[in-house]
Amino acid sequence: MIETVIEFLVALFLLIGAAFAFVGSLGLARLPDFYMRLHGPTKATTLGVGGMILGSVLYFSTRGDGLSLHELLVSLFLFITAPVSAHMLAKAALHLRVRIVERTRGNPDV
Image 1 (tube, rainbow, N blue to C red):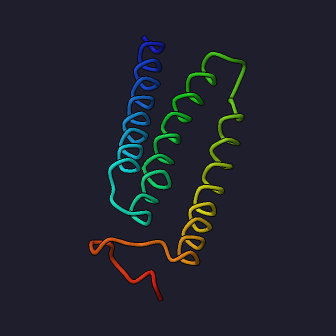
Image 2: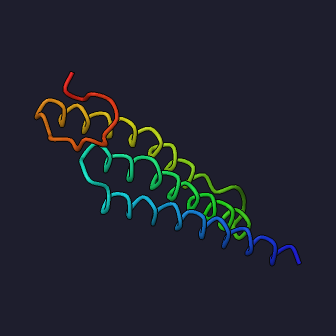
């Protein structure tokens, strides 16, 4: 009984993570300019990988000898590096004066 609940939760986390990763990938492919596209991999995909990592932590913690911390280290690295890399990409785009579409909010040319 308890194994069925754990397998259901693992599947749920994996599906939620996959849905967020798909939405992030779709945003990366479909949004019109660089500044809008930057949100896809930094926001939704980070949540997607986080959901998949939670499913992995739950699965390997119940199958192994104890709490699995490898995935927590991966998620810590992901949540630290994703915002920093997005910030650096945005600064480089501002420096290179990458064109924007009219729908982009704010004024990146400042």
